Length: 359
Image 1 (cartoon, rainbow, N blue to C red):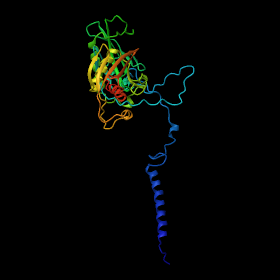
Image 2: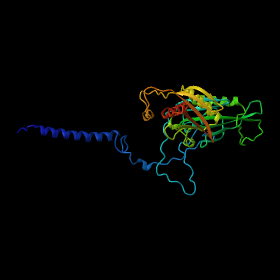
Image 3: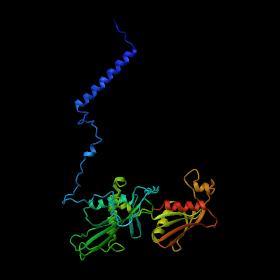
Image 4: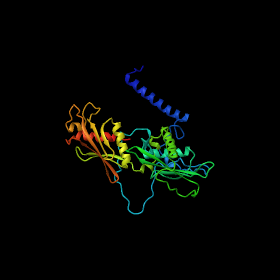
């Protein structure tokens, strides 16, 4: 008797053949060394239980560990009660004014580097600079952002030179400023004796030379802005910028600067020029600018303050008196309409425009 093949029988036959093929392939994988306990596709989820702790890496005495930086510094436990942090601090906001770049700023005899990077980003590269120049350091403190070189002899003389470099927050959060100071002696002080640095460098030429060399080195470092190149120790340096806008109420916006009055006046004058604000008059002795400002923006539509204070389509040019005052260690900058008529939108925008153009 002949059996009749039906679709149902064919389906069962195909399933049986598929199961046999799968079983054969698993056995083949084990036989070929792909699966199983010793194969490439073995189960590794429990291997960490047999992992061994390797000893700490030691630097040979003939080498130095100068360029190795502790990215995640663990401070010592202080005695007594300690604060308990339930919620971690929020990340620092990104400042739109921060630009990647290195600029040497000058004011009179003073000069410093302005760099679009945080202190934590700058510090490892600043240390690497001295290593590249094969100059040893006698002191370095990432917490304060200060380092000093050893005494460097001048050939064929008894004269020696020493440099101090430090990092400070810039005018805006996310920027940093680097300063250099130079001192020299005739070898009378002991090699390990702390040097007394003057308020101004013994040699302005040597200070400028080192400052220019550091700026060129940092400008060539493409890894300056990478997160993996950040020092957590230097990140503890005060990160708040030296310039901040305070807005108490409409028409009462002011700018505060943590600068001396001479530099503050110079920076304000530069910022006003950078913003293309028309200066009608300025008086250094009275600490006052008189400017013409319309409040025109690049956007087609008015911003929040424009909508809030009813800004129209036609821009009215308003004369403002920019008043600079010393309030203790803080320089306060305010703007008042020369006519005495309130102009809260333009007053607020004028102060913010000056702040945005500070370098």
